[in-house]
Amino acid sequence: MRTLLITGGAGFIGANLVHYWARQYPQDRLVVLDALTYAGNSANLETLPAQANFRFVHGNICDQLLVDQLLAEEGIDTIVHFAAESHVDRSIVDPEAFIQTNVIGTHNLLKAAKKAWLDNPGSSRGRDGVLFHHVSTDEVYGSLGSEDPPFSETTPYAPNSPYAASKAASDHLVRSYYHTYGLPITTSNCSNNYGPYQFPEKLIPLMLINALEGRPLPVYGDGANIRDWLQVNDHCRGIDLIMNHGRRGETYNLGGHNELPNMEIIDLLCRAMDQRFAEDTSLATRFPECPAAKGKQCTELITFVKDRPGHDRRYAIDPRKAQKELGFVPHYSFIEGITATIDWYLTNEPWWRAVMDGSYAEWMTTNYCNRC
Ligand code: NAD
Ligand code: TYD
Image (cartoon, rainbow, N blue to C red):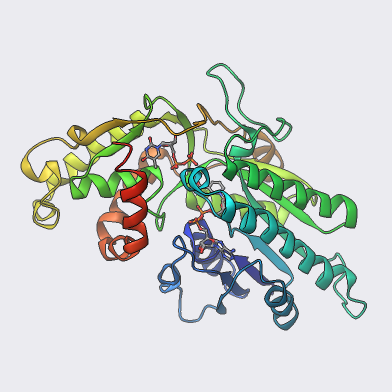
């Protein structure tokens, strides 16, 4: 039995990992530490099985005392570190929180792990049976041209946004704790995720919900920017494989071999929505502002807006290392994953209505409506 500390476990990918882990390893104890920022939502964990060995702690990874205390009192042997400020647009408007959480917060966790596992004279753990897994992003590698090969683990770091720079800094700190102190670490750098519980500021849920509500679908720039999309459960399986079989001190890139320009995704979502409304007449009653409810097409909501400053043109992952060493292959095709995601947002309307509270509305009004 392991005792995991999952930071940021009330956010999008963290919550999916908690559900995944509780299904996969029901004997393990799961301790979630989450500050419940605008992106964190304890409701994401409400549907865990009653028998799950689970504790939720509302707290900040920057709180060194709290983290030290948790590691000691719970006997944590595994840290899975998701907690972060994660939205590029917010990092452009206000980078400060990104430095605090992503850089200082990650360093606090590393210090606490080193203290609990390596420094405490009374600790019987040492390096055996402990692991700090750091969840990072492909954005640390910067932007690719259309002919460039995808990012591999040896691609030089070239972060372009304050978000990417803060994640790059955290990756370097994690690496340094392995090389300097021998702290057992692994790092994953993953491409763009989509799926259940994603906060509706990111491309896919934002477009879905705006279409349902009849609001503009804001396309940054020419809409030709490319991302490499991975269903979130495939990301969780990749993390599991790395934690259980990855070499300590190594980084692994996770991706879906699924590069798509933004406009292609938006078109696909619009067409899927039109079809859903045609097949299910109750949707028109639930979402009367959606063009599909009025016999029109959702694409009419597409609105080209001012580009994101420093907008990276293309991300693509070369996942061959994870495939070769760990047997990592995504299970979901994009069409299966996106169909299930549309189902999830249609079924879970109360979830997204609840997260779109005052602070969300304020952010959207000042930062999106001004672009249009
Ligand atoms: P998210 O924004 O949905 O969730 C972040 C979670 O961290 C929230 O629950 C939030 O409350 C919590 N948090 C923030 N600051 C905290 C703090 N100081 N202390 C404790 N908790 C705090 O993010 P996500 O999309 O789930 O991303 C999770 C991780 O995965 C991040 O590290 C991100 O960089 C990485 N990642 C994300 C993607 C993606 O497509 N979303 C892709 C690759 C990597
Ligand atoms: P996003 O989901 O913010 O992820 P990231 O910037 O971390 O890749 O954005 C994905 C792509 O979609 C990116 O190229 C920016 C673009 N985008 C839009 O065109 N409009 C939007 O409203 C949003 C949120 C993103």
